[in-house]
Structure formats: structure tokens, C-alpha cells
Length: 345
Figure: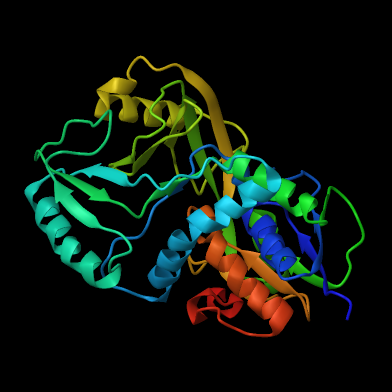
């Protein structure tokens, strides 16, 4: 029997990951994106794979937990096949505890993690953070979770594209659409649906980040007052990111990034003299439901959608790819109800 033909429109992390899952199951896959792999928001520089807090459990948090636990084997296989590094590492995350109320809440969440995460990972409160450049903490305590990971977004997209080609798939800037079609077109796809349906289905949210020359490749990442500080394996450290609904140019940085860099440098004295190597801005796809939008496409009958990764696209990608391949190739629907496309209407 001939293998199923699949065309994926969009070569961000969602599109490439779904394509990879389909290739792994024997499908003949073509990925089409005029900008090439990682041309949109998936070509960013931060790469914080961080979980939601272990409380008020729901399907979204359970799905994310599964995906973060799948990440190591997912990216290892991509790297083995492509011969390229994704920058993945599960090195955990540290957060300074800012006040007594936060300390009490952090300790409550320790118990929640024991129940919800089980032996897979820990959420603990410590006065000795396991990292090289720990910032001062007003309470003297820190939250340390062992579930968080890091990835280098651009390199990860390049590695996925390389693995696809190595397995016989096509990754093109233009080409004929054939077979089963999966739309993973990011913010542009959300805008298309909103205009066609006459109501908001989702939107693009501008984010800004910076890459600093600061080497701490084996260190945990930091999360301080909404700012991610992520050391990468290549001797750089990323700072991000902003979330801006109103903006003039999605591809240009501005003073808000200056403020973000200064916030990080004040919080982490070790970064004060670090040179800024790169400034980045991009538009991330945010579905109205705030969850990924997966399943059948609301506009294109018989076709499928994988969109709305927003800030957690890389963390959700391994599990998202699995359930989309289940649906597209096997007709098996394991997508949580809150992720289905109709949940965003």
C-alpha cells in the first residue's frame, strides 16, 4: 500500500514537528513555507521550555507535562537523524521568592508537584539555588523545578528540517499541495480565519528578546518577575520576552526591549557587563482560547490545523505532533477538547 501523502503549510516548530511525526509513521511529507524553516516566531532566541505551576490541574497542564517529558527523546532522535544540535537540555529553572506570601504559595506547590508530577520532576523550595549566577533573593529562598528545559529555537527548526530531508521528506519554499493538508501558518493563519469568519479567532502578539554574550551552558534558566533568562549551550544567554498587542512593526525592536534588558541586569548582577549580541522581535500566534488550536480546519473542509503555540509552542510540540499524526494518519482523536479548533470560536 502506498504511504499517505501529507502537505504541511508552515515551517515553524508546529509545522516541522507534525511533519516529523508523520514521516516517522511512514507518510510521504512535503513542508512548504515561503520564508523557509523558522522564518517566523519559531526563529526566536529565547527557548524557555517551562511548565505551568503544579496546581489547578487541567487538560492543558497535563498535556504540557507529557510533552515536556517527551522532549528529551524527541529532540535526541531529531539530532541523531539530522546530525545537527537543537540546543535542547533539561537543566531546570530557578525563581527567586520575592516575599512571604510567595514563599507560602511556593511551599504549597511543592505538595502539588508531588501529586501531579509524581517521580517525573520536582518543584522544591531551597536556600541554595543550583546554578552558577544566582541573583539575590529578597527572602533568601528560591523555587527550583527540574521539569523546565531549554532549546535554541532557530537551531531546533534547522535540525527538524534536516531530519525531515534525511528521511526523504521535502522542505520547500514553494510547491504543489498534495494529499492531506495541515495548516501550521501561525499568526497569518489566525488572521485569515478571523477575517473569513467575521470574528476574532486569535491574533498575533509581538514579542521582543535579546541575546547576550554570557557563558553558563550547564546552568539552570531563571524566571524573575516575568522575565526569562536562558543560558544556551553555545555560550550565549537569552533574555525575553515582552508581550505587546499593539505595535507598529512586528520585525523591529524598540525601547521596551531596552527596559527588559535593564530589568534583567538589575535582577542578575552577573549580566551587567554582558555585551548584547542580538536584538530580536517577532509576532507569535495566540489563539483566542490561549491554548494551541488543533484538529480539523474550520475553513478548509477535510483539512487540518495546528496553530496557536504562542509562548509555549516548543514545549508543546512533541505531544502536539503525536496527537496530530494520530488524527491525520490513523483517524484517532486524542486531542483535548480545550485544544480543538471550535474551542476558539
